[in-house]
Length: 207
Image (cartoon, rainbow, N blue to C red; front, top):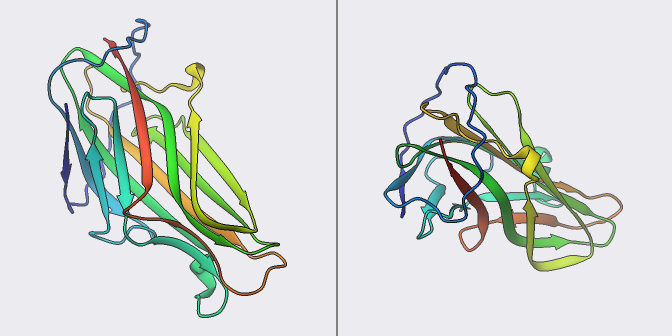
């Protein structure tokens, strides 16, 4: 099963150029054995030190990132730069030898307080260190919206980015929340917190 480890060590790696991944077919069943997910570094206004955790699902099928201080807001009492918050994570994921994996779906959830005339946006993107190809998933919101929200997006097969076989690469994940007040007055906000977060589903195949 997936095992999760959280560390505050900031570590950015310079890694080799992209290696080819075999064209084996995607398998439906995850491999047996231990998979470890480690937060190597967390930076950004949306994830101050100690405010972000990663947890793992049984069966090596997904991992979840949760946040405790990830809110974008505008309006009275909010700093001018508070309308946008971001979180940049470097994840070290190690799995059974002879297997590789890719993110196949991203699910996001949180809460919103958007008045009529305001809008918001939530963005998730990721790429392997050393590989410039980035996968981006964007969700937009329009006020009035008050309460919990959930969004999910499947990654197209042609956009699956497998970890190069036989290499150790960090998965870089970037997340953003943004609020645009538009014609609305008062406070507007988008939040991802400890009761919600980002779920990254994965698919596996043999090298």
